Image (cartoon, rainbow, N blue to C red):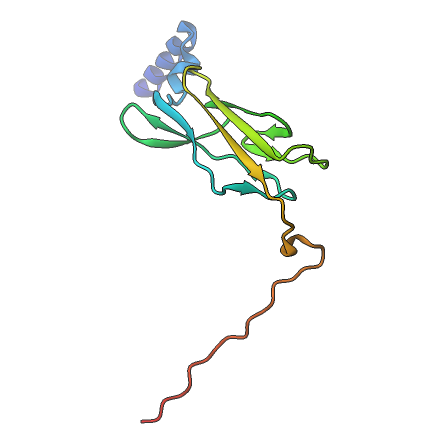
Length: 142
């Protein structure tokens, strides 16, 4: 019972001292660099695109970053978190993404990705991947 009261007092002093959020918040490591790690070299004009941003910490570890860590901007289209929502009408040949660290604006990166020009037949309505029949090895005679 005495142990339980000690915990209550500790919690009471943390709240009174104004350090309640700091006492329970998870501290993010300090970043050394911010950069884009993209999965493609061009964008399909029919799909939204996840913009992958990573950071290297001072200790040398690499972390995926989201909008809690960086401010993401696109020169056209709309950003919803790390996802770039492509507009219905395409007016540009490329899109430029910018990522700026929330804690240190000196850490930033910018990259331009081009839109695909050719139509991909797999994007046509009603397209289905051809099904391959499984190949079975011939039975061996002994």
